Length: 219
Image (cartoon, rainbow, N blue to C red; front, side, top):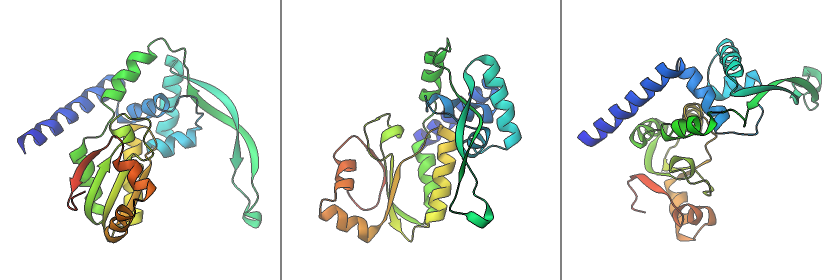
């Protein structure tokens, strides 16, 4: 118990230092978004949505990071919203976007720093997921244990899982760590069945590097 409290306090302190160094949690989230998605172009709306910050804040952070040289502006084509009378149709339009500049001189040390502090504390993650239902099993892999080869980053098993709540939690986690979370969720009976018939997805999770952070099933 005391070790968990100490770990949580240490994690919180690290985040506090980061936010002070970089000017707030919003900037840290935006930096992680670009650092962990090299080669991708994000519009201001994309940044606002992915980092879960207001549009005005996204514009401010993009302007700051562009001035520092971490990101570069680039026009790109994006689907425009379809008109009400023709919802199936969509047009392309050219808009401003930003992408990570691979020539930024401090890219590697900055990336190492934010990767080291970017993974959410596992106990904190479990506590968030518990609000989605009677959670019986939580397994992390992929980005949570820095293994890029994993098919899934997060597996959640439980009873009466609320899909919308779980989706909201995952989006919140993605905003914190700056990268998309690939996850799967199953009701307990479905998971037990899949486990018994050697379902490929379940085997791919359990047979490769992973960490069980909650287990009330006994996998």
